[in-house]
Image (cartoon, rainbow, N blue to C red):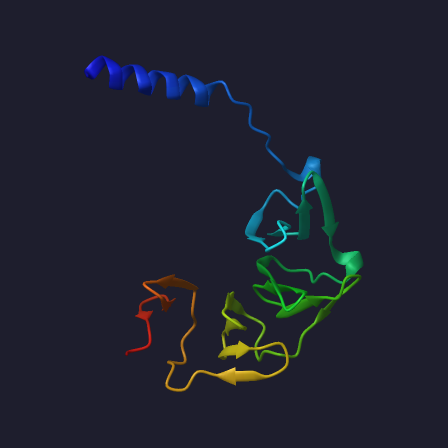
Length: 174
């Protein structure tokens, strides 16, 4: 049995070491070698948030969106596709929306220091230095009873949303 297991492990290891891996970087067309976020939409497009803009990867095609398309001079820390629009969250310059040609600053949020941005069901959740909001594409709403603290990340576990701050994990009681 040992030889059978060991033989399987060696064959699997050889299979992994004989594969070729393509690495994409700035020379290949990514906006920067400092990648801060990545998001894949339902159509297979991959959106890459970098220190120098947003890159969209579809198949082998790479398209860069930077300052000439209105991208702010700030790190793109989160990028998501929501309601057929591309949203780019920056660390210090606020939220930007891409209309297909240009980025423009969104007035949906208060504050410019975005901590995180996630699609939660039919809403976009955004946490800034001033507020935590849900945005359905036209209306901003606040979470009743939710603490006014910066949220660093959101994840799902056992059918519930869990919000992570610097010192707490928050979920809605049942």
